[in-house]
Amino acid sequence: MFTQQASVFIYAITPVHMGAGQAIDVIDNPIQREKHTGHPCFAGSGIKGAVRHSFEALGGDKAKIDSLLGPDSEATNRRGGDLHAGAVSFGDAQIVALPIRSLKEGYVYATCPQALARMKRLLRVRSIMQQPNEQAKWQIPPVNNNNCLVVNERLLSDDKLHLEAFEYSARKSESLKELAEDLAKMAMPSCNEYDFFREKLKQDLVLLHDSDFAYFAKNAMLVEPHVRIDPTTGTASDGGLFYTENLPPESIMI
Figure 1 (tube, one colour):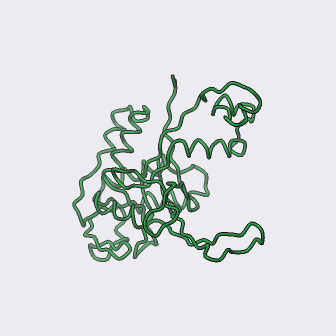
Figure 2 (spheres, one colour):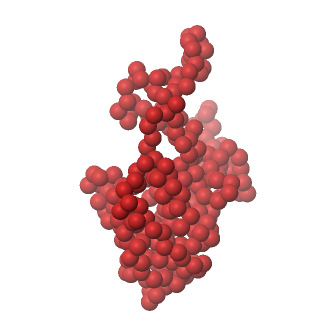
């Protein structure tokens, strides 16, 4: 039985590939997605594996890996030890905001009521938002299809926001501003290297309708071509071209 819980925000600073293990359409290596929303996700088992791989680099004591994360099954079988569960368990990561190319200000952090409501639910379950005044701040404003809410009016051309090739009717929202400020405080590291991104998240958070956000969650990922390397020659193999899908940098998950 676990005695403590915590919510963790994940901020991508490079393209991130958490593989789904099966090909879809022309993408050979797609990322993991939730079945019911189509949103990108990270399975808890994959997060745990990444933490195990980088445990010492993250400041962990190597002697505590087995007790915290569980022993490696293959190594345990070789040396005849006992297998047991680790003391730490990881849940799945859900999307909070995606970077979407904008006509102005470079890009925005796009989110939707569905993603924010799921984030609020996780934070509430983890007992982070217990004070009444904190809960009142997280009133998620409604937004219609083909419309959006913004904090920063400099993003707009007249009253329109242009994301990729799409145009949305936009209006400024004070409630979204409060939400953006709290999100920037929680989701971004406090070190000064993130000052620019923390301020940008405060200013350039955009709330899309769930259906509009779902389109970008499916089609705004980073797809990169790769070539298969021949292990003997160290050069590209003939016919070894394949495509890998990645979560783009500046994405935020919880």
